[in-house]
Length: 533
Image 1 (tube, rainbow, N blue to C red):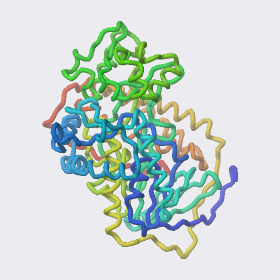
Image 2 (image 1 turned 180 degrees about the vertical axis):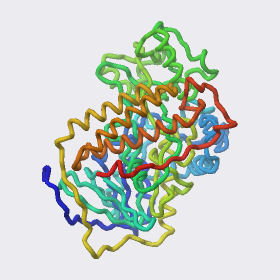
Image 3 (image 1 turned 135 degrees about the horizontal axis):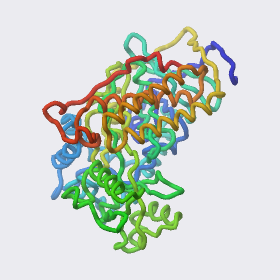
Image 4 (image 1 turned 135 degrees about the vertical axis):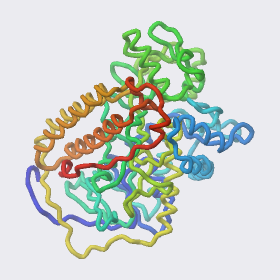
């Protein structure tokens, strides 16, 4: 099929519900949908590759009735969100948290316990201990149990190595998704009355990120091409403490380490966070990241250090087994040595705009998890609210779908699509990927200004021009299209917001301006044709 142009009928796979993405948001949504509906879960790679699997810290939930409450969790979320959270969405998140955690426990998820009670720890900007966890591999533990349960369900089919290409929208309604089956090397049309996008974030538009290689913004790209709206795209969270080692600059050192008392030290070995915020190491992530960036700039160093050497070795091995082992593999004994860390892109607050039920502005199309923007996180996500969001709003979407009638289309005629697989340009396209990453890291990172944002815009536009001259279809080309879409949205929104708020900091507008900017920025794709395959 290499380089062979063709107009061919493609296989139709009919389901009641199609879910694109196999992290916590996608799989939990599938499990919450009634068993009389046929469900297809499509995943770009294999089930073990997602942001959810990599999540270390835990899940925020108010379980301590004496010291905590949903109201306090609500207050902390709004504080971190810097004035842009949607109150209704946050109330849903905090009030429905406990019920969803009970469901995880009933599915066999093994959270750490103190006696008969779930263990609670604290992370940045939380006023009390409310983070439940499973060692330092919470995401993997939850994903493993959810996937195990999904495999038991006769109404759920899982399609690995299936790359979602584009959504199909007819008369304003989403009817399913065109997918490239990488194993069979052919296109398929997954027809469904309900399509849920749960593809995660877009960290790969940056050079340094905790996200896996699959996180190229595919869900946002697909949705924007059919007229969906994106919101809060300027707010990109950089995790303050990512391992900085010659062999690894993407391994996350969980915020839970700071929750257990770890101290940040600069190149001179001095603690510095007290200079920047009264909460010190447990300040909101945007504050800590900028503080580290400032200390690195002052000393000319490429990293700072995280110090938890005051804890016993046995405790650290038990509490943070994955972090302990990974650091030891790189010759760092965290019970004796400081951990070299630096900020890296971690999470996007913005995404496909949805209502409190996860519905987009297109009938039959839903979004859930990091790819969605319900307004929960505002300008800066509160630690450990991300996995919780996937659970709570996955259930909300499932409830909405269960209310509706089966509307999956029954296609009598052939569905045809013209395409040619052409991987000859992939080397050029991979170079474009790196150029996008370098540009976004240099100009659209932790600290921004108009000059840099305009330079980024011009570079991305130049890549657009070269991209549009390339013919044929390849998976790398599709990823570049999606990365260009997302990069453009982030830059445009960052240029428009002439203030500093949460994770968006502009050195030329370094104050928060509630009078003019206490509002969300919503954008659509202005020119869909530029991304045609």
